[in-house]
Length: 234
Image (cartoon, rainbow, N blue to C red; front, side):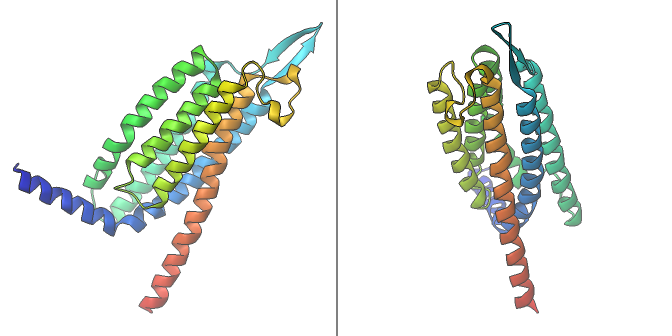
């Protein structure tokens, strides 16, 4: 394939992505709401399960092990990805298009490397340093992955990426600075402090609440645009 043919193919993909920006936005908000709800519930359950009791003057922690905690979030990621894949598949069948369209392939090539790197580094730091640092790195690299698709996705996706990147950096700096006393700002009693509490708060806030707010905003904007288009067409 010549350079001219490659350029023509790239232009075709870009034109297709521009035409289907509303479609991607329509798919993104149900995924954001579904994944955000799952992350919020999971983080709340893990947060409440993580506790510490004082017995005979010593602290006995009762909670989930880091390895099991990681597996819980990996399962949540897989469920969200499957749900998103189902939405894309349904849309592709409705439009009689292949599931792995040129646009989706380009998006995956941009999205997967930061996610893979962040996933591995986050797991390593969760197991070797503290879960809060690992959770912060997951948020940071997820934000970078969304920003990597800024030339292929609606403007709302990179905006979400910037928000998560900044949130992850703030969480990282806070987790790194608080040392052996997690969550002092929240007034958690010292005998109740646990690195897992902080990690669950980061995951619930960034992957849960942020996605829920994003999903609601994009849903309202999408429906407003659909109503406007219907009125103009009528």
